[in-house]
Length: 266
Image (cartoon, rainbow, N blue to C red; front, side, top):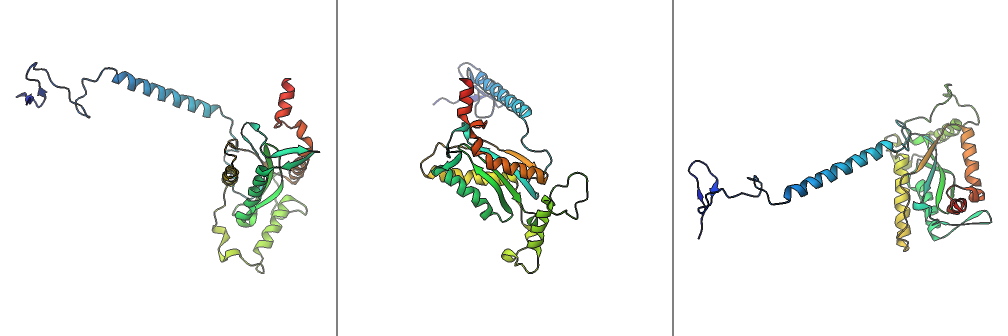
């Protein structure tokens, strides 16, 4: 049996035939590497660095979707739009300027209404399901938050004027804090975590996608992210409500209508 011998001056192993040191592997002496090993590792590193640079460049050039520094869990009204991936018509069709929901659209309707049932601080204002997207206004009730609705125009709104958006929110607050009204679940609602708009829509998208996949439509996908607009005044709220109600009647002119895009190209 051949056994390599050790040199008297060091602990390296030497071949008895050639006298040259034997390369040691497994994390020890790697002065002699196998052919091609270093080149392959270097290519992987270069490829990874290039990929990271591309990702960082994309993030820098991407237009921010949300208002920087704004707390999207605070009380207020939010106008939201969520689209289907690639603008495919999954939810039904427009007939006689009215939206006719199919099975997929009915699931989306069910899960949108589920938000108000699941989260007691969520109020659903005007909303509509279109063939490939949904518009909706979510109102986060001030009675369940520690932050007041946004104050605009530099005026003191501590005493709300009749008919204003803030007055409607304050009325809701008064009704929920009335000692004669029972407190739900007997818990302090001020300590309850309020989900942000992103978290609420994440729950909506996840649950609706699962329900749709269960009926065999496994290719359905929501488009990533969503469009939002913080409603800052009562006049804006009224204008957005009217826009949502008229959306089915304006489908032929809707930018989300794939038939409109194809007709332009023709």
